[in-house]
View 1 (spheres, rainbow, N blue to C red):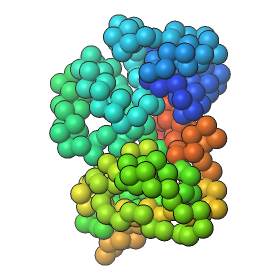
View 2 (view 1 turned 90 degrees about the horizontal axis):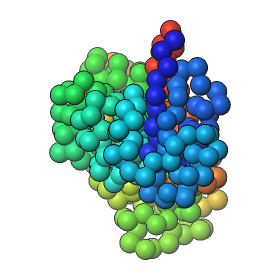
View 3 (view 1 turned 30 degrees about the vertical axis):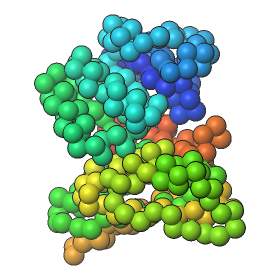
View 4 (view 1 turned 90 degrees about the vertical axis):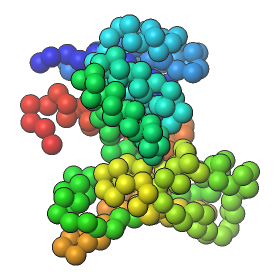
Amino acid sequence: MKKYKLAIIGSGSLGSIIASFVSKEMSEGYEILGVQSGNIENAIKLANEIDCKAYKSLAEVITDKPDFIIEAASPDVFKDIGVRILSNGINLIPLSVGALADKEFYKNVEAAALENNSRVHIPAGAVGGFDVLRASMLMEDAEVSITTDKSPQSLNGAPFLKGRKLSEEQTEEIFNGIAKDAIKHFPENVNVAVTTALATTGVENTKVSINSIPGFDSNKHEIKLVGEIINVNVIVETTPSKNNPKSSALAAYSVISLLKNLVSPIAF
């Protein structure tokens, strides 16, 4: 089996889950070269735990020529590094898929990948069912929506709220619109909406509803595809990540699943 070289950008809860699992359970297929983060102390801590480098810059990462770079930082970081990574012939696995709602950035990413024989592998994140959703869209045009239910605590701080604290007593639909606008207003909460949109009807046509539910201890996403031939309903409910309540550990494990698929002799 060929052994692929990995680097991870981001040393928060999701990056740490990926790094720990791959180093312990997937060493036959992957070698983690190092970790880079905006917080160098966190990068050093994680690097020491899994016995790899703590990179100080993206230039150092690129110099080591990994086969894949995993982005587990933020949409802004993805926008800053994505094209540069692909332009160096390195494959990219981004968790901050919401950045691709920006049409110009999407086109630049696509062009860089095509011109440099590199690829962007989009993980399912905290949802799923994209195989049947994509197949359904090949059959017919359909309407697609995603409804996200979260606790007030996991939504507080979103730019859309402009500092307003959500009620701890009353359920509230705080956003109803399209995926393109949802990710702009909730950059840390609804990457799943953009992933769903990219797999189906696009960020300007995929409807998004975000609900704040006091006392709700899960992150719940319900995707609906409605056509004349086929209807699809996908519901995923997970508890938030302990270290990052705005996200779910499932997002990290979706990257791990993707990595497993890339080296498996029988792939899904």
